[in-house]
Amino acid sequence: MNNNRWIAIVGAAVMLLPPVLVAQTDQSAMQQTEPQGAMPSGDVQAAPVPTGATGGVLPETSGSMRETLGAPGLTGRQMADKEFLRNATTEGIGDVKLGQLAGEKGSPAVKTFAQKIVADHETMNKDLAKVADSMGVLLPGKISKDEQAEYDKLNGLSGKAFDTEYLTFILKAHWTKLHDYYMEASVANDTGLAAEVVKDMRVMHDHLGMINQVASQEGITLPPRPPRPANPAAEPAPVAKKK
Image (tube, rainbow, N blue to C red; front, side, top):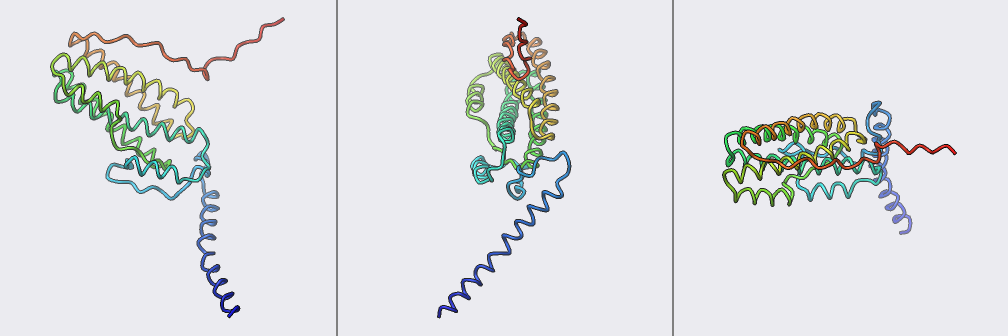
């Protein structure tokens, strides 16, 4: 009886060994075949994430679960890059939704500008999704609470009041995003993400010029740009005074 139990235990252990060995082999092969300049293998925490019809943009709950279950090998910078991707996507979704509303309710000049905003940010969102796929990041698929509140506010306006509110909001939002993108471009761990951020910054700079042009055409006074926040990392270290 004791021998039979021993045989059963050994048999069960042998059945469990192959998956472990395969996992170790896969990890070793991944480290050996990793190209130069790629992200460290410690960032590869799970199998590639299946993309949905939205090109990698999946529900927030699934994304949170995916990040929680990942192995704890990520550096603080890598985690910050992933958080930037999620925030940038949420804001991009808001830009598209607000632009679609402005394309319906704005003046002719505002409608034309809003159509440009929608087209550009839809492209940016798709490109961010590709970067997210390469980094194993699941992205949110809905507008933020603040932008939803702005959408509801705009939906209750019309005429020049609508145009003024929309242009003012999108102007301030682009100021904030450009600052965030600038900071991310200087510290991003992933080269693909850094390249995408720089490309998107150029597009948003063009948007700022368009906003001012449309506001001038419509006789709308926009708020002045606030002082840019200081970037401690970019400031030179103080020079010690000679005694």
